[in-house]
Amino acid sequence: MRIILIQVLMLLGLLVAGCTDAGKPATHASSGDMGPKPQITGGVAPATEGEASVSLQQAMFGAGCFWGVEATFRKVPGVVDAAVGYSGGKTDNPSYKQVCYDATGHAEVVHLTFDPAKVTYEQLLEIFFKMHDPTQLNRQGPDIGDQYRSAVFTYSPEQASAARAAIERLTAAKRFRRPIVTTIEPAPTFWKAEDYHQRYLEKRGLDNCHVPE
Image (cartoon, rainbow, N blue to C red; front, top):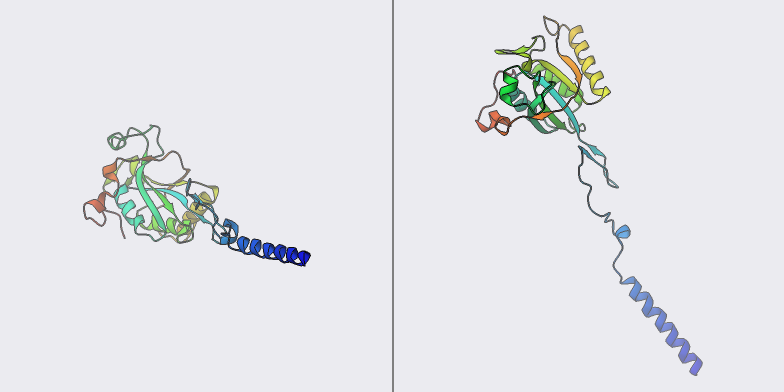
């Protein structure tokens, strides 16, 4: 009788232990919680399990006065951010006044961050060539000087190849009466312009300047 009682008590002990383990909270792995979400660093967001990879890319264009160029690109779905500034010259951290006096060699540019899943680099190139006259050398409309030159600053060999292909297509199609003078250069340092230049037209309730739609 005593032996049977001991066996019953042992069986009850095992049942209680099993219920306690079953009531424990699930671990991260079993609950699907994979820890903190990855932060976007350097324009690239690493993929999490079950999510598509999202890689934000950069682009930089010079197409005359940067106010209208920025305003035009900001309307493009897939463009995450646009900032105006200076690039392609010899002076570090130039001011607007220095660039305007044609003393630095910099072009007025717009630097873009974009989502290639929503807008391709080829589509950005198409918009770029539509928004200005790429046959004008060191000027754009009434603005004269090498700071207003037409330029594509590339961040990869693929971007450079796409830019060359775009010019070849436009030339073959005789889109312009004069030769395209747009330069294609590896992207140097982008120097962000003064704060009052950022979203300049938007702050003043203006839609555009001389950039054609």
